[in-house]
Image (tube, rainbow, N blue to C red; front, side):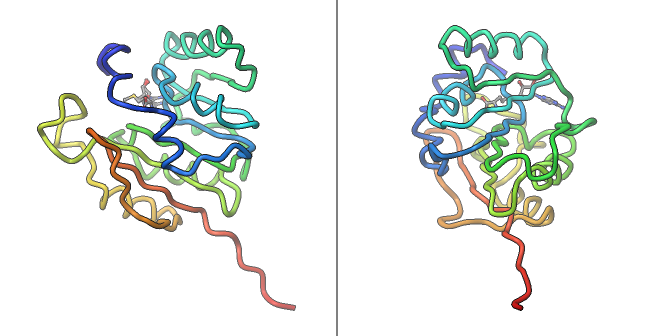
Length: 190
Ligand SMILES: C[S@@+](CC[C@H](N)C(=O)[O-])C[C@H]1O[C@@H](n2cnc3c(N)ncnc32)[C@H](O)[C@@H]1O
């Protein structure tokens, strides 16, 4: 990742969360890879529930937990964890909104999406952000591993998600978003 000041300039985080449908009544948001907390703190300010943020880097986890504390946000819990190899450790259906932001170039995107599906309650939402599939962006993973939005959709649908309207959400200047749903279970009519 670039340094924090540069990274933060790529996003208007509150606007992004609003465009991706995060609502104030969210009960529990889970973030895979919280980085500098670019989206962690804005999410915590927006919702009445809690934000569970996971990252593999202890220094980043301490940074974000410290920022939340300094901001008086008591609804942020940051945890050091490798979610590719060990998942989140959360219970099935523990969350109603998952953020997979700038992480699906990871080695096992399908593993992350299956874990997101497992921890989401039926009807819960998955929000994805990634760098535009465009070599002229000033940063971002190499094009060899950078997923196209269509690829993210295919992976997510294979994990059981359903893409919600409007589909591709441009997040200028350099990103796109997708919002998907873990479909609610259908109960047979009595
Ligand atoms: C490109 S940054 C994105 C940070 C944040 N989601 C954002 O968009 O601002 C990816 C983050 O995921 C973390 N990460 C990468 N692989 C991970 C893994 N296997 N387990 C936990 N965290 C991981 C990195 O340490 C990094 O902080």
